[in-house]
Amino acid sequence: MLQAKYLSPILLLSASIVLVLASACAAPAATPVTVEEAQKVSTEAPVEKPYSGTQIVVDGSGHLYGPLPVIFYALTALDGIDIYPLGDDAFSLFGLYDSGSTKVRINNLYPPNRVSGPNWNNSDAGHLKLTGVETVNLRLNGVNERRSDGSIPIGPLGSGNEPQVDVPKLAVMPDEVDVTLIGAPVVNQLIAVIDYTTLVTDQAMEYAGTGVRPPSMYLYWPQEVKPTPGISLKLESFGNLVSADATPGYRYWLRDVDFQHGNSVANDQLMKFDYLFDTGTTMTLINDRVASSLALSSAEADFDCFGKTGAGYYLDSVTMHGFEGSYTIKNAAVCWAQDKIATGDAVIGSNFFDQVQIIVDGPGNILGIS
Image (cartoon, rainbow, N blue to C red; front, side, top):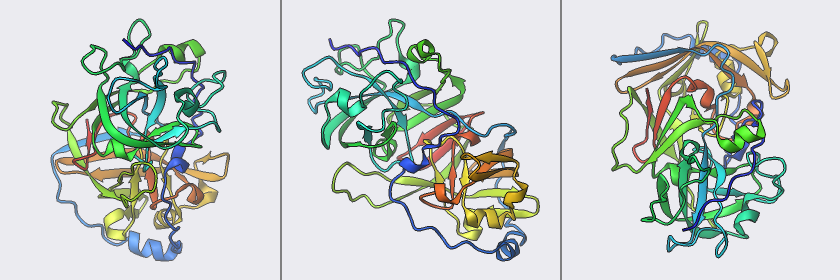
């Protein structure tokens, strides 16, 4: 039976690094509105929300950066038996479960995989002997699935060494990304339970002394029994599923969200904003249009972000309205960084969810909060 090699020590994920730029298909930046124009709209009487039911409220004070959903992945040939590198010992590597990437991108020679360790001098594509776009099966496990003997279940189905899920027939591509991105083509098919309240210390991470602790994570097919969320929020898929290389997938807008600061509100539906839901981003970003709507001034920022090139704020609240209730982050930390947003008006990152468990139902277009 093929066994996974031990993974090399993991390099500390700097809290100041956000993987927004890995997302593909950049949209043209919208023309910023003036503060006066924005305030005129944002201070109009807000639309009353007809929602009731469960109200989940957390205090976001100090929660600038959230943990990233790092997972184990392995590639197999389409027969499901031989695991990459084909004909050799099997490799299981670290990747990022990333709803913000339109494709599955395998970290190539440069830059090195940020979560592979400083002394492991090869890319993921190099270890897998992946030289171009190939169609494979993708085996995935949460980091919490490492066994007591250090192995990771990636063996052939029926071997007793199965992964949480085995996603068939995806075209994946080597790419110059700083961590392998398990992107939208996978997210669109699965249900991921990401428990940010339960962080995992992996053996390789502990050995390296990095202190990196990704959330516990389980992956399900839609027909499987899975946890029921306290509330469900609406995701809206978007994108063009046309690609000349790897399999593409849809990304998601998170809908019916109010950013509020003082008397100003930036609501995506009232003001025609688009808020990208991105599991691969540690912090939440806003562009000039949203900042103007909230009457923010860089001179009055609460903290610096991106090496002082971005201005950080604790907003009074961010409320996400759902089908059975709402989820509110009081003192919600955001970074105003126009040049870091490739798509939409805001990127909603894991710092908004690091005190709850979320259920990302890709095929159902639902984000659950518990």
